[in-house]
Image (cartoon, rainbow, N blue to C red; front, side, top):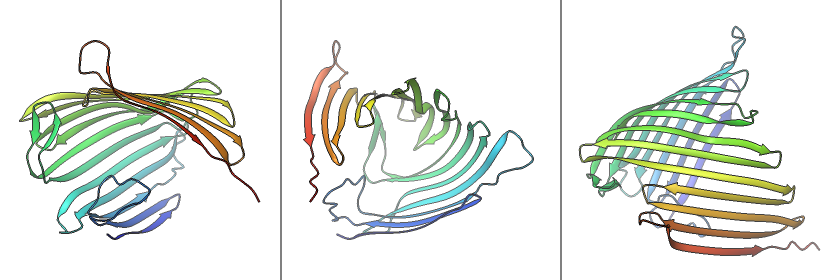
Length: 274
């Protein structure tokens, strides 16, 4: 039931280094929090070299990063996940960024994995590699975001992904829309399929203390459309009112999406000063 973490970070402008070790045993209970996985021992090491060239007027900075992410099962020290990554990035003077990322992956499946309809990845260790190209528009632009293209292996097959993420459109000074989309074509010996993930977030600030956020997400892998609306009002310094609405609808059936679940939550906090 043990968990601990050690971390060392050097975040200089020209050089950077990070080393981390994290243990979460099988019976650890986070009490308040969320664990994406348990029973693992993770070791992560990253190094960075990021010079600022004087001979290129249009280039602000180059970055070369290499990292190793190594995850073992805590109770057996069996290798579960490994990712070796090498990344090259160029930042222009207008804040646009171009990136190239190379990944060497290993995943151990202890149970069969079904990523799509009619496709089941067998138990065992799987090695696969991929490469990703990306271009990100500078955050100072009214319309910005990152477009990417990924191509490579996917367990026993291949994957091609086209994506747009970290997008932001400034509609008004107090209103923005943040769209993202990921389209994945996966081809395996067991079959081929496509998955789409579309997310749109809308933010509106009435004033510095009142904020309304909305999110709509479509996931073709689960045939669902989910909606989240949240109003936050800090009516007094340190005291807040939250009004939250969530629902999930199944789109697999024809006609209007069928409601799966719905929640309406009101949270009220008050700070007392003595």
